[in-house]
Image 1: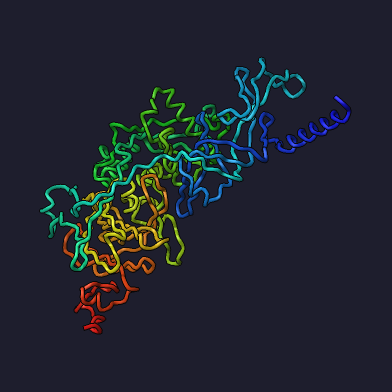
Image 2: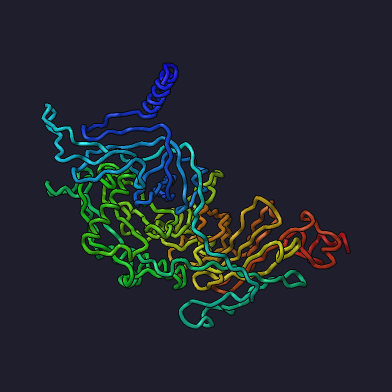
Amino acid sequence: MDRHRLLALSFALAALCSAVAGSRQLKQTSTNTSTTMVVPYGTITGTAIVVARDFLAKRSDKILALRVPSGRSMHIENVDPDTLETIQSGQQIQVTGEIVQEADVLDPTDPGDAVGTADGTVGGAADTPPCNNGNGKGNGNGNCKKRWRLKRVRAQKINKLGGKKKAPVETIQEGDDDMGQYFGNGDPSALPAGDRRRRLQAIKFGAVSPVYISTLPVNYPDLKTIIIPIAGFNTSANQACTGTTMPTVTRFQLRQTMFAELQPNEPTVGSYAKQCSLGKTLLNETTSYVAPIVRLPCSGNSWGIPWSMSTCEFDDFSGYADAADDVLTARGIDLTKYKFRVYLLPPGPCTFVGLGFVGCDDNFPCRAWIGSNFWTTPQAIAHEMGHNMGMGHAGAYDNNGNFDEYLDDTCVMGYCCTDRCPNAPHMWQLGWSQAVLLNGTNLPAGTTLNMTLGTPSFYYRSTIRIKPTWVTGVQQFFLSFRTKTNGDTDLGDPYGNKVHIHQAPTSGSYDSSLTTWRWSLVQGQGYSHPTSQLVIRRAASNMGGIAVVTICRKANNGQENATSCANNWDYNCDGRAGDDDPTCALYR
């Protein structure tokens, strides 16, 4: 090799070494056995897990985790909120950003990992036995190696690679306009005045529109769930870990919280599922289980990443879950029998109501965590399991015009802790209610539909879903009539016996979009939506358990004309037509 080529090669090697050195920033931690290393730019691929974190009287947030093929999950930080809203649990993603690694001294028998292995390890080798750290005075043997484990990623860019869980197909069919099977106790004819199976009337003054029935399947007919109460315990001191206390709730009390068989006259998670779904989804002690309390040490590690009972970061509560799973497996409990795993966290640093995976891929269990003050609160557990089942939060606008994603008090996915069923968009999403579907075909301009709404406490076909296909940028409407019965017995007084109007972009079973409560109607009240030109009114009715509504779509910019007056059509949606509308006097 000539002198010039040798010089060029030397410069190239120097540049490469400089680049590698510049890409790693070492920071010594508080112990002499572990360091943290940040690689400014790296990429890792895995399965997305979106986690919702819920607080009392405080805005929620979401966490993005990445599950790698080995089964380990790691926290993805600095995720743009708008990007996070487009990511679905179970979807394959590629994350590029700062790679934060942590190194631990390995056991001599640990075989080590190669750089870039699937479990998130990014370098290192096995120890050469015997490993002896020594006492810091030069008597160690130098054989203790460090292995760098990927702790978290500070995201700079996220690429969605596809692989979303395929959603069940919505079934839309033209059918009869009966409200469907009645699920009340006893003969419906024995209820107050009116035929409880009165047919839905879809009438344009003088014409009948086709009736479309929209149905989604019930994805979870059996909520096979294991409840795992956790305590942090210092065995050597024979007391709770510092900063925590031992739980006082008994296992029997937890069983009473979960199973209606043990407490038939009080709200339970099981009664919520059965009553709100009209028996389509069940949670009972036959297929679910409350485990005896699991005592965990005050600190440990999961997949080589430390966790502690004194803090409440992602690595901590994820580590508690991994450690509790290990304990239960050692006890001989087959965790694969349970789709849903609910971890009850001890009194300590975790102050949230709960957390839950938002949607669950079939390749990993659904996890939820419940804060220490809510172990026996059925609504809190049902809310987090609702996230597991794919539901987002249920919000509304406050009096100042600000959106609060918990403010829908008609829905279990709103604020804690009143027991109530899901709202109409979520009921339809879960397959717990059928919807009569209106769109531009069966609700053309100038049409008024007179319809009946049965309470979801008794009727399966209990929702009217309006897709305003004639205008862009308007979310679909969901109408329901809620009564303080069955799963809604504890529904707040301001919301009982009213027709509720929601909007949501919800498109299917796995759509975790936020829903928005818009308005509620007593008899004689109306709601107008200018952009879609819809006017919804609740008519007078003496039929218990059933409400009567009219749905009108304006025509001709809401102006009557000779044609509308001659045909008794209500173009301005004021509830009057033809000779009954004073406006038509101009055209007589």
